Image (cartoon, rainbow, N blue to C red; front, side, top):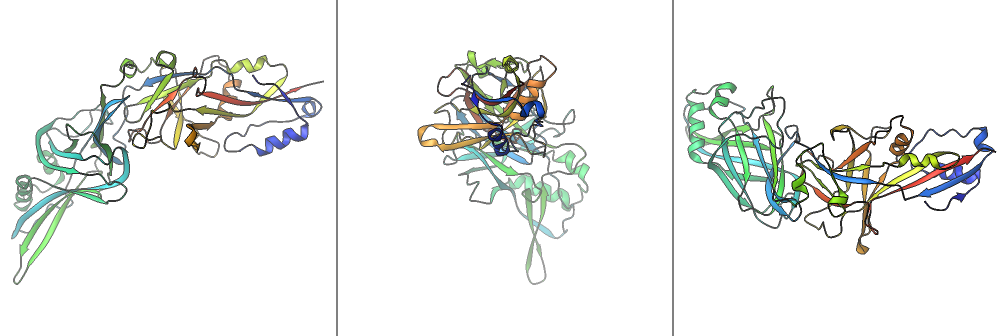
Amino acid sequence: MRTPIYISILTLFFLCSCTDDSSYDPDFNAGNSFANSQIRVIEIDTLTIETATIKFDSLITSNSNRILVGKYTDPEFGNVKTASFFEMLPNSYTIDSEATYDSINLYLHYDNYYYNDTISYNEIHIKRASEAIKPKEDAFYNTSKIEYDLEDIGMLTYSPRPMEADTLEIKINDDLGKEIFDKLQTKLITNTDEFKNYFRGITLQPGINDDGAVIGFSTETTSCYMRLYYSVEEDTYTSQSYIDIPINKGTDYVSFFNQISTENSNEYLQQLTNQEEGLSSNLSENKSFIQSGIGVATTVKFPTIKSLFDIEGTGTILDATLKINPVLQSYNDNLSLRDTLNVYAIDNNNNITQQLTYSDGSAVQAILNKTDQEFNNIYYALPFGTYVEELLNSQTDDIQAFALLPNNYQSSVDRMVIYGNTNTSYKIELNLIYTVYDED
């Protein structure tokens, strides 16, 4: 605890007025007793903070608007693999009886998301689902499984350009294309149910030996579709036409999900087999971990926050900022840091109960500060006054905790390693401005 700073009433009001409303806006009432008292502002940075790593049993991935396909090897998180499964349905079941089949392709539109090395080549293997892509309950999870044929119906080796290019075009096996064409043309398939029974959907799988990037593609029906081309001989010319078979987003059940997995992660992550049991950073080399898609999160607790009541006088928190330091050399241009981290309240079983927001509905976020990047002074600053004030005034003695995760953690694979509370130079730290007044 640092030395108290004695200030005048005027200076205190100036400090309050300069506080960022978005980071903290306490309902502080300075009454007559306050006005007639001696004011102290105390800067505190020695409160105990407990950090740990947890892993959720599973994450829902069927509500995403992003297809994820790719594979890479991470020094901490092991072999990260993403694959996607979805139904596809024609937008028409009619083909001219005089038409002849030409070709069929799958089109995938980038959605600008990627993670890891886009310099390396990726593979996409398209395989036919052998069971209905329909969940047993209401949703699919990152751990869900659907059976599929091992033989490719299409394959592409490509150099990802998610921020420059527009759409991938992948040739589909003509045997399949001709079969679909014939069934539509001869009216063997005339509606949605018949098509689903015949063609259950596809999965997009990365190459077995891929070590590049996870790439995001849009799930919009105009961005993910097979296009079946055919020709019709007219009197004096040949007209070309097509039928689109887009990803199905209009059913009464979810028929899409991303499967996300890791293998051969570090020894600490391999210990995370029970969601209810976190791994203290004191037992993992003063490190904790975050990984989207897999459901690895860092949790933070303030077990001694109510020791502030030991300070003589009546006080309130004027401001609070949690400083979070990524482990040096755990990130680079490929394994990049997100610009923000979201904050979620969790219960005693490490279930997320709510996302923390400010009074205007905006998300409470830790913001990455790169001002002194050349001096390895990169950290997240989390304005946290309101939450800490609530902890301080809570009527329960339960040690409440929150989890740090990137935005869209159910549809990405961003990862991070952060320091715990025992590193001298880079430990996680809560900086408090605590105002105390003593009545005469």
